[in-house]
Amino acid sequence: MSRARQRLSVVAGLVAGLLALALFAWLVGVEQVVSTVASLDPLPFALGLVAVVGGVGAQFLALAALLGVRPSVDGALAYLRGVYGRQLLPVGNVAGPVLIAYSMRSATGIPTDRALPATIIAQAATFLGSTVVAFGGTVALVAGGRSELLPVAGVLAVVGVGWIVLVGALVAGADLDRIVHSTAAAVNRTLGRLSGRVATRTSQEAIGRGLGEFDDARRLIREDPRRIVVAAALSVLGWTLLCVPAVTTGVALGTPIALAVACVAVPVSDFLNVIPVPGGIGGVEVVLAGSLVALAGVDLAAAAVIAFCVRLCTYWFVLLLGGTATTLLSTRAGVAGS
Image 1 (cartoon, rainbow, N blue to C red):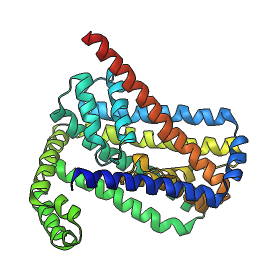
Image 2: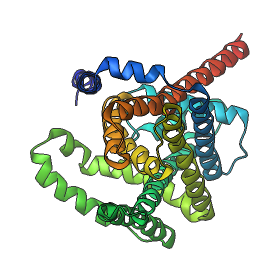
Image 3: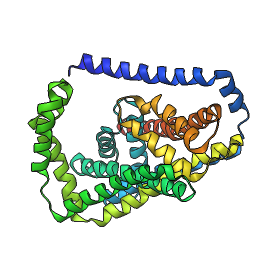
Image 4: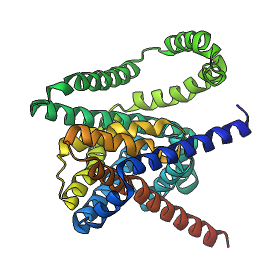
């Protein structure tokens, strides 16, 4: 795809996301949303910001564990700068590891060929963490009488177990290259005929490059599988903390949201971050609010405000932290070069 078409797709995705957000606000009623925000108790909401700091910190510690380095201020700032790029640029979570690896290299001296495999595994561990947290929340709701969510729990369990089996196969030395190449070839022959982008992504050259990076990650896993366990545990902790703002915002509005509900709604809505829109703007808010209505039974206006406030904590506040880290690192580099 040419650069012009890439830019057009990015702009179109961003516009679509903003339109979805605007349409949602219009359906709910802007005045109703504004009046609900005005009644927000600031103290419980501030506790949500503290939880987000802890959640992002846990994700950084997971990456540090995978890299085998001691956590440091410079490393944390570099990680936040990478997260800033991932949140700001329309790359979705798929290309996020590249930005974080580059940031870690330039600020800490860790070479990209060492940082990239670790960031790829960290992204996978983050996905597992969100799946485990969503599964735990769903099981808690099923145990509380929400038997209609049992199929959702089953799907999440299959996804989580599949991830663990895949890691186990890598540690055991299973050769997955042939399976990947054959699957990609099948997709290329079918869906590739309908989409040039799919055809490009599933070509032998593209799959070969991806497997090269994957081999580096596979070697890292084999060297010390315990790192994966530590990273996964920290990712589960991080995602649990990132779900807390939904609870604290509910308290701030006088509309209680159970932690189990938050643990399902927040991770599920975050799955939309794979689309090439900055931070999944529009789609994440809509899905989060809809999940709160379906799972917690709150009215649409309150759900919209809670979704907005959660995103204020987990996206815009993280963006602010990343921007601050980027400024500090740039200032240091300028002083060192003068």
